Image 1 (cartoon, chains in turn blue, yellow):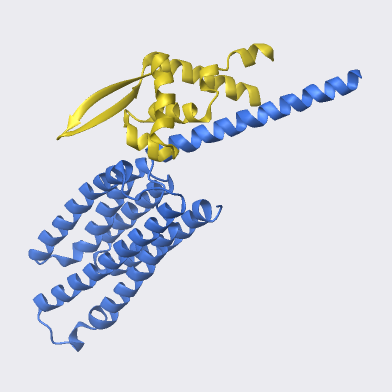
Image 2 (cartoon, rainbow over the protein chains, first blue to last red; image 1 turned 120 degrees about the vertical axis):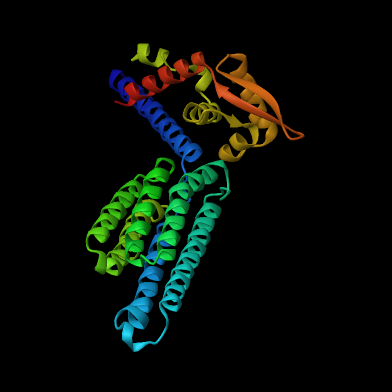
Length: 217
Length: 96
């Protein structure tokens, strides 16, 4: 009788504790959901990385490997590289929106809410600054530095926006900044650092994010 | 044990109220429709819980106009933050 009573009350406590654990889980989830952009999908990173590598390969094989093989003017060459970079950027953004939209729909969330806007705003300030600065240097004919500038400002943009999304983005940002500084030191190998930063790092971090946040559901 | 349970706030017994307090504790403010979307609730359901929390003086609302559209914004009060924190502490010490 006495043992039965003890077992019963232990059972009650266990049931109660389960509710408390569930409560804490719900609280944590709501705090994250309401203050962080969690629709970001790792797959967008992977696709962006693949696109960047393809773009860099095109630039290398078509122009940079042997500049004497083509008879484009310098202006022409820069326009081709710029067009190449623009195509990579647009395809990456396209994949980013597509996979995030899919992830948001899966968890019954709107993709474009206040938090998404706040994240994009914080991302865009360093990003647009870096983009404009790159164009200025291109205009001045100093295209060697552009790989370093894009990497550094992209890294700063990620660090800035990471407060509103997954913490891994912070470390991806730091990695990009370090690679950018290295690219500024080894000016003639800019394309190598650019390919590592925008290609390889995106794929690696994309897979980490995908494994950690997308697969578990 | 009984003593710890006594620290749990009855006002936060419902998952919906916990949700509202969680949202307002990490955001400066949130408007009605944002909370509604996050918690996946109907207008009426959310309104009744918000009224209860307002009645306890845990949250407060400010009504304003954005253009011509009325907009109701909610913020957590000092006493709301304190009570929610105490409730969280109690929950945590219970499962420890």
